[in-house]
Image (cartoon, rainbow, N blue to C red):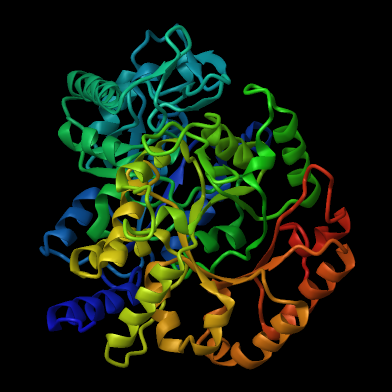
Length: 591
């Protein structure tokens, strides 16, 4: 395959841009504050004490950080005025009274601009009313009153944003009674046993945003141009609904640096537990190191009870997560019985086994404390010539609606080979990989989608993009067969890591001796290129726990720090909990 000159230029330009993601004049850091209190006795998990806030403001000044406004971001995007170095966007969610009594005086004293996000259902009621706040009923006086808001809105330092009118809560999302954030869930009707359609969901969100904008315009004389998503959760449909209502700038809780090139998905860091300066400094570092990934893979069939509403197996799985505390777990959204393939979510391609994916993914993260990654087998990426059942991009969109997960792992040897072939056509370069930033990888995949003409690559990128309509901020990993590692050049590895958040070397078929021999001969060049932090190793579970422990214990010798095994037998607790030090995110296996 011969790449065109235009394509090569596009690739080279995007690689260069990625290296400077948050270091040039287009990058900035955004901070998401909530409540501010006077003493530690008043602290909630999302609050900071006023003395810590003053320390943080002083630290910003002393270290030459420059708080900027929404106008500054728009001017920089339009090319009228570049952002200052070390630009910071300060924001406060929910509209607590403390913003007026404690924060606003400090903003005026330091002359710091800030974004204030208002949720209509909390501020519209009368001063003596009570409102639903999360799972609690609280006094309306917890939030800013209209007199205070008028003074704030009149200040050139304050940008009034919409936090939706009444979407800051969960809605019924399935027949199991699960409540999932209202912006991302399709509402389930237990009477008709149906889900709202995409169009109905869009109208519900758009109607809510319109109502909140009208309320703010009526009471404060300004139509908000910024939306702050409740819980930081959103979809591409929600972004369109916001833009249709005049808000094409949105703030998320994606913990990555922001850029003026993507004001519709501004990532923000969320200080919790009243951080001191040592912790706060970490929020201002745009060089985010990749997370350490210790994980296991499970057989999806083992998650399914014979009783469609049964929870016994899933309960055992959650117990296993609490026992081993891995950083992530991966399983397929498909189950297989013989040659029969079924899906765990409603779709138009495969028969439905049980509608369980949304519950499995959501509760694995929120009850099990472990990120869920979906293992996507070759079947989903095969071409019509090799697979009778065609899996279109719409299937991935259907999956995305149910997959409230941390990421996807693509196991497609054909795709991997085509990407390596593409890398071989590029002129020798040594691009900067950049740091952990799934939002940046997503933008580069979009660039590649617009330029590649290779059907296999084009097909995969369209499917990933379809999935991300509903799960915009996820990590995407690519599986590399172990036998490809000896021929994987540093340039090829760097090329792949422009578009994938990490590479997973599939060593499930190798013996411990084969694996260690492969690592001895092939990790040096990757270590020299500082790429091993973005490479994970998947091995086969041995029936003998000690043999698996020995293998995992040896991996740091080769500077391998990310690993997992297949399959964890959570139904029978195999391997034994003696494996915990080697997979738990709470322990240090390198000691």
